[in-house]
Image 1 (spheres, helix red, strand yellow):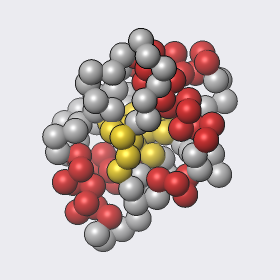
Image 2 (cartoon, helix red, strand yellow):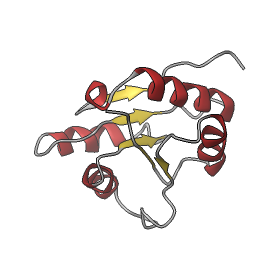
Image 3 (cartoon, helix red, strand yellow):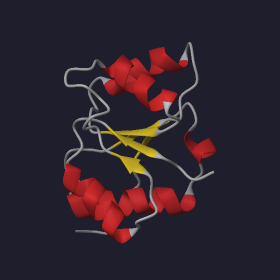
Length: 120
């Protein structure tokens, strides 16, 4: 089954827009209108899990801790973490790679770093 993505509030909308320009059939939901401002990490993880979406986040500091607590009590489609040093273009290429090469089972109950894309 193809991966469905959920952007965390910290994901630049340009990433979603660029990704959909590259591949219009990718299911990448923005945080706007889905994740209310100020939602704690546990709530963000619940929103993504309820909709069976892999969470895409730049929250490297706290998301992993909350994720570990979350999967201790329920299933998660997974989380992709993106370092803040990555450019929008590199992020788009990494997400496209994940979508083309991984299945939803590859990320179930896991936190993964977004694979490196081509050099900027």
